[in-house]
Length: 148
Image: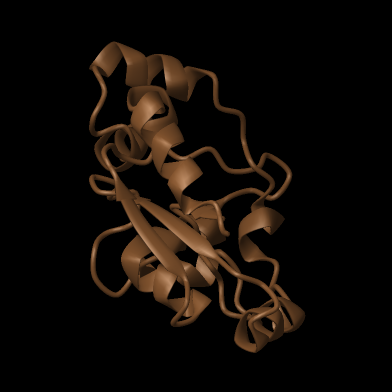
């Protein structure tokens, strides 16, 4: 089951999946320090459905992520083979106001389609942090996304 997930193609990194204007931040990050996205980006793209004070609290609790988490290339050949063979069934939950990545070519819905024609795609209220702003609705959707 995936929730606002990158579903990276085999051979790509997470950084490859960001729009070019956003992915530039990975090249500027100091690997020794890790990467913490700026509050303005988190506020406007990921916390766009919560009060300012809650967004500030959430961002203050974040810690830098190792740069390699974003830049290492991933070998997902076996994963996608399992999906293609039908041995692995997938569901994708997409909060409708999640614009952490912009809609369109880089959007979450486009990524869900990478999980094959039998991927169960569900929509739920909320933005990127729906687990804090819409916990009941998200829980209900996650239960629905559970595969038979």
